Image (cartoon, rainbow, N blue to C red):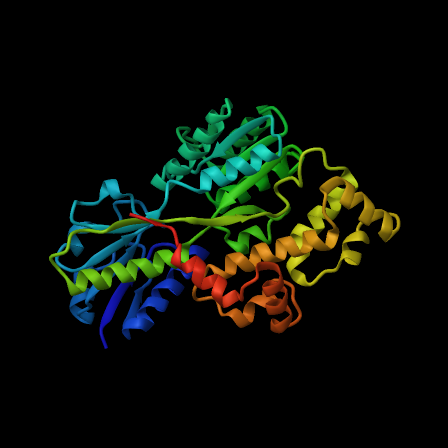
Length: 389
């Protein structure tokens, strides 16, 4: 059995999804994947290569500074870098990175629909290449509409986290409200939500906040729950190993550099229900967003506001143009589509994750809505999977 080494620096949920993709490919080649966990200092690469004698390495870099791994340590063995700024790599190196297209556009469109009066991008102090890409795309979409975007965290230097928090709060307070905020990732978006709560800035009424990565441990436990752009991390892991395999089989082949796409936006309660939505309906929409995939009914939603169920249904239809039941199903099917795009996702588990009582109930509902089975829908989408070279 051949072995491949997987070095990683990230401890985010994204890495688990990338690892799922890597194992999915490894099963097609009967590989052993040996994971090298993060260490305080640089790993002893040559000793690990001498020990395992792998066919090659995948080196995930998104959780560390660009200089943490020295590409020269991998120059003599097939290697694919995952999540590393290509400008820091030598010409021979292959890599798979998040695309500069997708996250910023999806966030901008969502916030434009919310009729925000101002817009901001929040960065960490890391100045990561993928953060700069997301900021540039977000700003370009806004500029296309004649709108400006304020940026925090890119150039400022602070003596402490407390000073940074105060400066960020002052920055957010000064922006015209309502303000649409895109954060470079979910960690920074959760940071914004914490600041908003501490300084009594209402979310989403005053600040509408969107993150990137859809780290559910953060997004679903944030208050309010966090809307986030979902990236195709599983495909990134798969392609990294697939490229590694081709390099191992053909050592003289040139480097391969690809990017992976954004699959969609998971809407939660940090973004508004829509411009001009009456408070009663907005409350119902927020409840649907947060609980649609838990098996709720229209009656459960109507019970969130005072008055009769019939009146709640009428108010909802008048404001949104759709029924409560249809809105619940829209969100459920949106989540079903996202899960179907993940090849490692077992079809039998999707029903329970998306609010259906049984697998057969979901299969019947899906066939009625789309005219094809879930399996055929997945195959069709897999054939069109967006990987940029």
